[in-house]
Image (cartoon, rainbow, N blue to C red; front, side):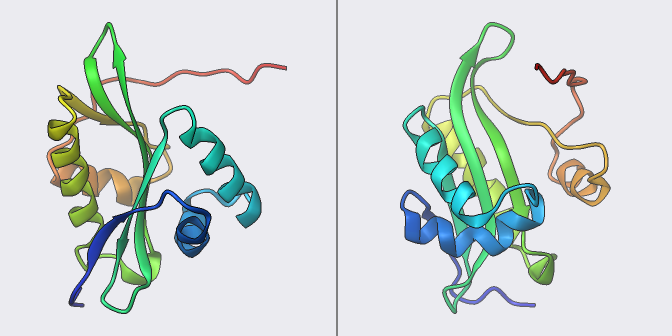
Length: 146
């Protein structure tokens, strides 16, 4: 499946986030559309950024939510909160194009690394990340707080 005149755009307004919802819903089904848009806009006040890959017809085919942060363990990094390609458009190059854009943006932002966490159930995503030369570097632990 060709990607035609696809482009990568910032998703920093409600209209673009609403357009991204059908793709985001595939990764974050616990959210609803209005809640997602409100939360994304709220997180943007704290440095969250969102980027979409749009196909030649203007349909969002991939979404990334990310931020630049600095940690003692890693130095300055671009951390990817969310990365998802529309299931109906997988293997068309949209995810790779967006990940390549994120890597370039990380370099532009002076980051030493690009990092992301991925749920253990997302085996197809893991295969993609490994093909794209990302490596499993750590285990992530957490606990829900009451």
